[in-house]
Amino acid sequence: MTKRKAYGILFIYAFIVMLLCAGSSPVIQYLSPDSSIFYTMGRGANKGIVLYKEIADHKGFYLFLFNWIGAWLTPENMNGLFAVEILFAWIKLIFLYKTALTFEKNNKRCILAAMMFMAVSTNFLSWNTGNLGEQFALTFQIIGIYYIVLYLNMNNKEGRICEHNPKWMMIHGLCAGVVLFIQANLIAMWIPFGMVLACMLLKQRYIRNFFINLFYLICGTGIAIIPVAAYGIWHNCIEDMYYVMFEINFLYSKDGRIGKTVLVYLKDFLLSPSGAIVLLAAAGILIAGNYYKKIYINLLLISMLLFTIVCMSVSLNANPIYYTVYMPFMIPLFIIISKYFKDKWFVSLCIAILFITVIANLQLVKKIFRIGTSSYAYESAYQMEQLITDKASNVLVLGNSHYYNCTGTLPHIKYFTIFGSSLRYETFPYCIDEQFASLCSGENEYVIIQFLDDDYSFWNDALMDSEMLACLDEQYHLILEYRDGGIHSALYQKKKDI
Image 1 (cartoon, rainbow, N blue to C red):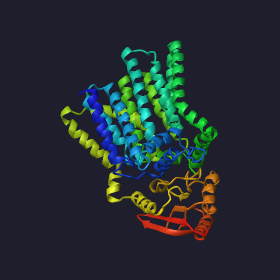
Image 2: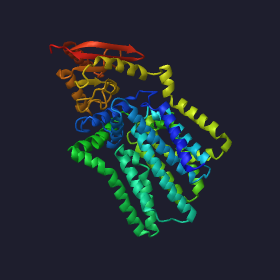
Image 3: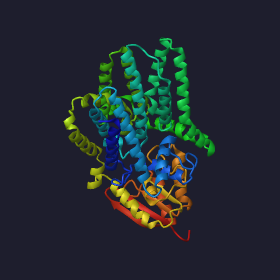
Image 4: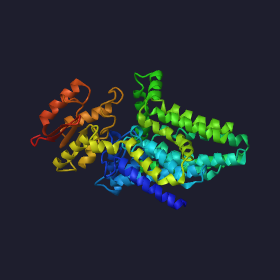
């Protein structure tokens, strides 16, 4: 089998998996709350709304850029975002396949190793509905792993520490730079690699190679930063970008630690179902270490995993989505497993892995059997879309951002849904104040609220809920109320005499 044919098989597989697993797929057609926010940001950017200055979420620029491209491709639906996710899945599979080829020359086994990795990376706990920063970043992490493996294999073959190819370092800088502006702590694996590599080169007195690599690293990172800086300068929002991406993220992390202890986090970290991903990552490191049998390589691999664990533990949050960052370390495990497969099993194994992927992902199962609240939330949103006659009018959504996407409307306030009402008012007063002030101002033609319960509460504060209901009664007509499948939402229209 040629590489070209292998790439074709991987593209078909990427398309089928995204079709049956991605929230943006025409088959699934719903995004999780977080994914909905990111797509709203992309839609807003496509309509000329300035990111971070006019609408804001605390994630990085490239996450919104990828969603922006999707919205630009098909402004009226999510097919453009679906195409973007297929492309990222395909690139991911190609570099997994290329990595496997450095250890196993059988093309079919390498394809199966890539497919097995995809099955795990799309599990329902860490995948959610796709379109997450962690999933986009995973593609760049896998590219980075491939070039790290090339260097380690060169050392292994030569039996000594070799000079590092500067072009590979530029690719590392580019990938790490993009990931930095998706979510900063996801660059964790590159930091110990860079530090250990620097020590290795200097110890061997590869001074010239060290400085050339440093220059290429800066160039690669600089290339990644240019679009971010250009956007900020063009729209005069550099300060807004820095504040939202970094300072608010720090506050978010700090707020998330309140009431938590290290021991409680460790319990959640180890006992979470997603903790199995960490165990698989550790198994991958052990397998790789056994293959290379060199102390400095083993120390490098262990330090990369441990530093990643530390970086992801700062907020003491064991959210299953965060476990995606450990997945690149699992690659050796799937390469070893694939060695036990025979060529005559190839088609059967492809089908079996695809079936396991879809079942483990759960999105198609949830769609067919209407499990959970997602299908009901989207059903209510599409009913509201029929009643909003002017898509350009001011619409305020209190709750899931998917109401903006389904109704074809966009936010007109900066902190349109950032953090919602779930975090502490003391930490993010301006977010909640802006939403509440907009509700009471009379500036909105429509107000959509997804209540927390059947008692019309939203703010987790009895006084604010009471003021909200009084404001709605005074200024708005209730034109649709939806109660089904655990969803209680309502659409209000401004009274004509207000």
